[in-house]
Image (cartoon, rainbow, N blue to C red; front, side):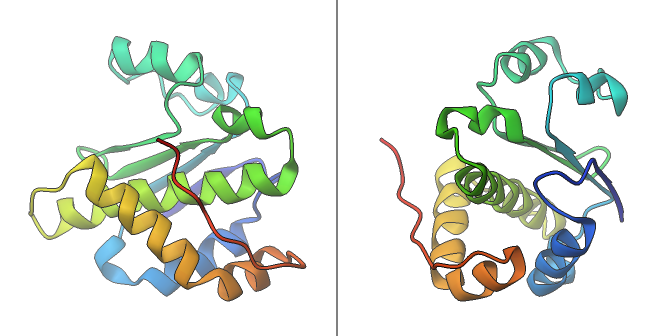
Length: 148
């Protein structure tokens, strides 16, 4: 798997540890951590459909999974509302896990829903908060809350 990442919010090592913990069923070919809108062009991600592309540019989409290339994109700048480095990391991890859930269902050739993947991401983060705190070098544990 190839990781495209500037390294401000996550190191490739941190991402690798997280992906390794999930196992082979969550296998993807490419992971893009998009910190700034210009990274979309930098990484050549203009192949997305126009509706998604507009949503991505305006920060309305936190991530997506492209089945044809088995690629996951996480748009960290969509988390700017938090104005807090650790919160941006946390909710970007949530987006990453959500998109990896889509990859999982794609890999096992089973239907899934947005709600399934959202629940997976929230539950996985909350059940493994000690692991994530250690990997991310956070001082405290936390709990992710779903927004309505």
